[in-house]
Length: 186
Image 1: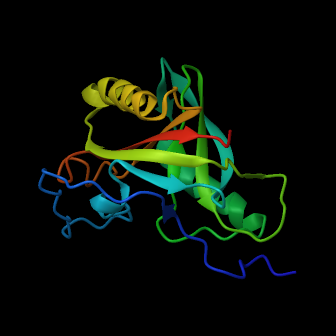
Image 2: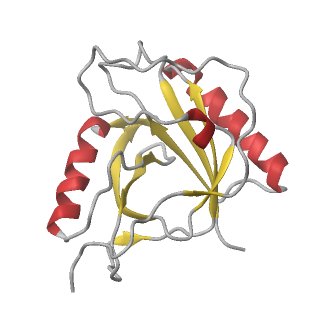
């Protein structure tokens, strides 16, 4: 059986996008990096159906919550995915979880077969895309958690961060970061 998906999987929005008052961060073409560039209206304060989203899971060491080796984990997971015959989509989500000593990392993958290495979280996610320099991360994560809890009547089951910029383009793109509140199926 082929490891290629028979149909294209995609993130499917559940609700309509809110109107944004902010001016979107402009694309930075002068830098050569492979950071994702997302349409803010498709991701900011939007629910996404995670019933068919799949991830390859790993972890990074953290020192007081700060991930060590995060910059290299994407390539490591992409290599593992290739070795397992899994497809890594274009601009895959690379989510960083919580933890003071070890932080889980999820790389979005696609496959049609059952694989013990693939995590299928199910449920849905509510995300926000915000400018978040290192000093703002904790406050913006807490704010997102509180907004999600108020919106859905309970705290999220999991909370993830997706850094949308690298060391090369972060400042020019205003440290664009996605905060993801994940709710599993009830």
